[in-house]
Length: 460
Image 1 (cartoon, rainbow, N blue to C red):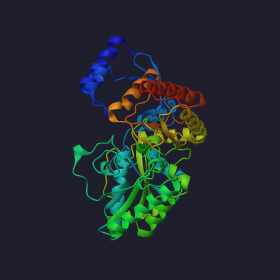
Image 2: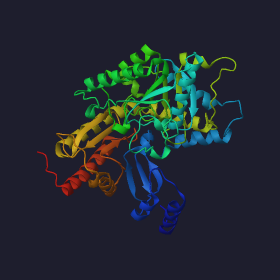
Image 3: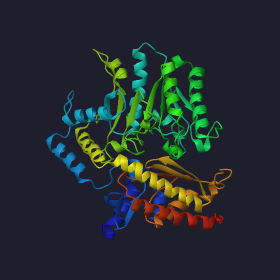
Image 4: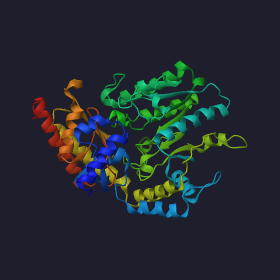
């Protein structure tokens, strides 16, 4: 616990000097923010005033093993004492071992690992590999990338133009990078193409990708990139036909398939990687967040051996350098993190407790007229609130639903910030049923209060 005077001094320093993610320091000053966290264990964190909170989204759906795992800190410390970095043109033992471990646990022949610092870098690297691969095969014109509207692949200059979400505004950074093509999102609850079932939506949205490839010309398309489960869409799980069809379409036209597992990977959906739910092997997979549970910056782009082989041979290497790529301290932390996930059966816990959590959220739907949909897999879930359940009508912006909910969640002990009526949920994989009950109770209270203010009739 920090003294009152020190806490206020730190708050003023943050308001004066710190540029936080998607926060306005003038608004924070008015609201008494920011809250700053000084300790954490499991799903709970403690702020500077000694208040304990449940972190509903484990950082950015990223603290998979939970807070306070001293084993990871010890692994990082031991490596830092031995060797904090490496000379140009060399590598280190933990970096090699991490690459080997990732090759072991990822699907199929995914085995060549390019380590980076974060998810945006991993996806940027994937795009560069895809385009460079085609050039090495003599397909000079393949530069276009198909992504899906409403997806999120990062905020660096290239991947910013993939997909697109309201929370990742792009107007300030125009013009768009050339070659970005956008396909429909296979969200069964709000299918762009009018599919009335998950299967119908999946088939139509996959066919739309093929239509785009043929419209633009297969000889211009380098890759399709997609999240197995789209978190910006509120854990939208596509119908089972979607991913196998996408794999077949990409094979048919010689297009690379990139699976963005930055959020979905390392047990989040109840399997080690979400793509395993559909038995599909992508050509390139990107991972971050759960690879090291955000204890240090680390991510990776993992490539099928058949694709990586195009970069073998003298003067044929991928021309791509990042200073912190393959950092030995992050690699050592990641190895310990993956060991914890496996030894403590956190993937299985994600599946089992996730199913319990989803059932509890579906129970809330019986009591709350505002809940239009509950969806997700494992511990990647969402609740979508609507003004009218029958029509799926959204709330008017003037209702300020996100702001009102954020205030109520905070009152009931949750760190759970939302910026739309879609409540994305992704707690640490170590969460227990008892902790799920606490979260669901706080959500229940918050929704009752909101419905009371809106004058929404109780369901019976």
